[in-house]
Amino acid sequence: MTAYGGVLLVATAQDPDHHHYPLAFGVVDGENNESWFWFLEKLKSRIPDGPKIVFVSDRNFSLLMAIAMLYPLSHHGHCIYHLSQNVKGKFIGVNKAICAKKFRQCARGYTEAEFLQLYGDFSSTYPSARLYLVEHTEIKHWARCYFPGEKYNLDTSNVVEPINGVLENARNYSLLQMIDAIIEKMIEWFAKHRKASAEISTTQKMVPFVEKELHKTCKEAKLLVVNELNCYRLEYSVIGSDGLQYVVNLRSKTCSCKQSDINKYPCVHAVAAAREAKEEGDPEIQLHDLCSKYYWIELWVLAYSRTIYPVPHSCQWIVPEDTMKRLILPPDYDVKQGRRQEKRYASVGEDRDKGGKKKSKKPTGTSEWLDNDGDQN
Image (cartoon, rainbow, N blue to C red; front, side, top):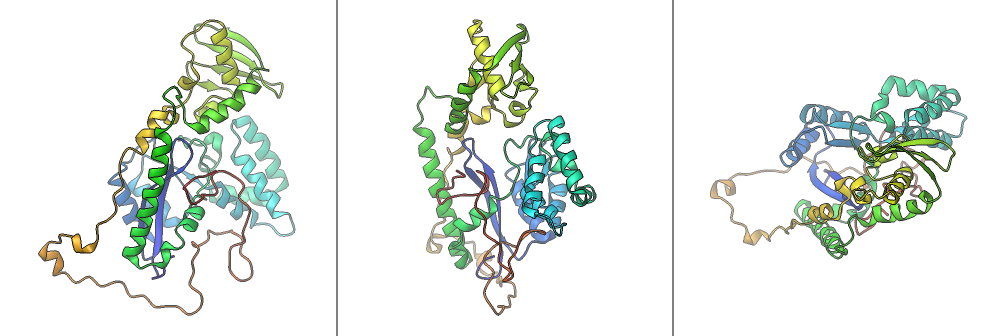
């Protein structure tokens, strides 16, 4: 919430190197049908609807309605962190933190078999939680293995929290000064990541995040047993470190563990199969070819190729005369007694202490926090 009663709405994505990538922001009078419709209508003027568009959010009713109306071709995933807080709130006399953690483990299962095993155990232990999920959600909106769209590693909307933290001081300004401060921060982030992407060696094909992941994966892949199934289709059988057998298809960039399919870069089994193919003399197989182009350096560079310009001082504006004659008054705003709310409004089920403040928690994942440089890590 801003110092003058408005609500700051933010839409953010993730760049190829897993940094937050703000797309749009706006100040509205509240989170209602009209404000979310206006915000997404403006967003749609720059990012059109399509089946590759994915939204991840808490289940704000007005937001869900606006997405359904303006982005009917897109896919919408529920934030599993917020949903886990809703789920654990249905219990009395049990360890709610463990309940929430078990739910998130279910949601993050890569294969249907893994999900059914985890969800079956969860349902037996927490039958009320399962009933809540059945009555209020559809599995395809929160279970990774059933989600119809491509959301890569993103399964929470907790990026809102760190962005709120970064912009905390800006929210104390009047509207125009706040917008200037936000743009200034965006310029800083873009300049930093633009420079980082430009300094990468021309021999490096993938962004640093994926390079590090594959470097770690290669060590384990060397120890796995690989058998060729079909040299024409580049299909291989790989015995994982868990003793289970996985089938890898290098041509379709898939593995039966589903991690390659969902994360869009090769899992340990795919890396092991690629090593085997290369030893057999197949010149076509390169690790970067097994990654989504989204993770290629050239796409990272392209993401920051445009310039964000600061808004000139008002004395430099050229305003049409008919606009100058228009009188636009700010909305009525009653200053409430007591301390002004500075944090975002909590979703249903989130923990609050007796004073009404959200309980602080140690960050648990790369998608939950954002430092002052716009990083997730």
